[in-house]
Every structure is written in structure tokens, then in C-alpha cells.
Length: 319
Ligand code: PMP
Picture (cartoon, helix red, strand yellow):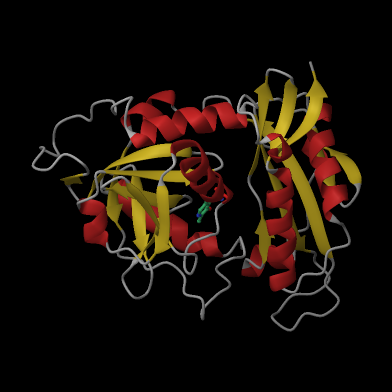
């Protein structure tokens, strides 16, 4: 990841990729106190655009404010830096990672006078996403690790340190041969996957966990709006138990990088296929399913092909 050409924005300046380093005593490296975003850009018919940059940037500013990390940059400046980051690096289908972190002015929990830095790096998503995963979906294991609790951390903030918990849960599931994990909140209700929100469909109604332990995902919001406006579906945000996922007609995960991925199996139970043998390979999902229809709508939405959602696109280059 280090040895390549390109430009990274930090605190208002453009650094050559290879020289974009930070000091070993940077506070965030030691305690995980920082926040970040994952933003996507897409090549559409009218050129490259950022998708929902305003919402991602607002969540970054909200995260930093909640963590009490004062930022010197406003949303407009940060969005402009994201645009320029794509232009300078000549990227279109890309992933951007704006990150807020503390400098090395002091170590220890009581450190004072720490500088809050912001960086924005972007890279081509390339084959990070296996196109087959979107059609076939994932097999998941419920985690023995609980997700965060609102009285343990700030669950709405996308905090670096939160991801220790995500990685512990994901690694346990992957080592046991699964693709993903479903994490429960400390009371045992469904929270989210390692880095994605979760939805289930039952009797034509979509349900997703309320935002307590899970991140307030921006894809989650896009999907709720698409489901209501384009498919006329009812969507409920409420507490969900793991057996509701087992017995759902359909289930899927949502996230900026993952987009919409079918959740096909949880703890050896095939979702929407009662009695199916979990040892059999997964078949592709029904193109008429709600999951597949939402995937199609989301694809058109992010490529700028769906009328009425232009406000969610920030043009980067015109073609
Ligand atoms: N939950 C977690 C823990 C995540 O890391 C992500 C990815 N940012 C999501 C949910 C999905 O959020 P979004 O749709 O905003 O990418």
C-alpha cells in the first residue's frame, strides 16, 4: 500500500503518496481515538460523481464533534478535497477514506494540546468486490462477541477503535469457514454485520434494527428510501431477534463498499429456504426477489440513472 504514485490530502496540503507518513507517537495509533468515513465515487453516464458526500462528511463532522476532536475544516472544504483527491489521482470508481486523528503532541489519556489532523486518501476499488458475491450472497455466523452499547461508546460515531470489536467478530467467523458475522447488541438483539447494516424481509415488509448499537449507515438510509419510494414497501426500524433472521423470507447487508449483499445463511439455517441443506453450494438469488430489485435500483441510483435523486450526487468530472 505504501509504494505507489498518487496524492493524499492532509490538513489542506497535497502529499505525495510515498511521503504521506505520520509519527510513531501519534496519539490515535496508541488509543484508537479517531474517526473516519468510507465514501464511494462512481463513473456515471454524465461523468464521475461522489455518492452522498454531504451525508458522509456530515457523519465525519458529527463523529469528530462527539469524540471532542475539534476540526479546523468545514464540510464544504472537505467535500472539495474529496473531489480534488479523485481528480488528482485520476480515479472514477473509487473508495475514499477521510480520517480524523490526533497528532503526537503528547501521549497518555490526559494528553493536552493535541492537534486534530484530517487526511483523505482514495483508491480504485478494482476487484475488491467479487461480483458473484452480490448474486450468490453470504453465509454468516452469529458472533459470540457483542457489539458496542450506547453506554460504553458512541455508537453513532464511526470511531477507529470500534473496529477492534468488528475484526474480532469477523475473524472468528472467517476462521470457522463463514463469509461474515452477525453481531448482537449486549442484550442479544441483532445489531449489524462486521461493517454493514442488516435488513430482513418477512411477509413483504422490510425490517432493520433501530440505530442503537449499529452504525447509522448511509446505505441503510438509501435503501429505506428506495424501498419506500420505488417499491412502495413498508420499512420498520425496531429490535430484531436472531430467530427473526433465521425465519425471514429474505435478508441482506448494506454498506458503502459492499452495497447490497444477500444474507443467505445464518448459523447453518438457510434464509428463505426452510429445510435446505446448508452443506449445498448457494445458488444465485431470484432476480424477482426484493433483494435483487433493490440491488438493481441501488446500482442505477449510484450510477446517476435514477431520476429524483440528483441531490445525492456531487459531480467530480463531466464527460
Ligand atoms: N456498520 C458498520 C460497523 C460499518 O463499518 C459500516 C460501513 N461504514 C456500515 C454499518 C454501513 O454504513 P454505510 O452504509 O454508511 O457505509
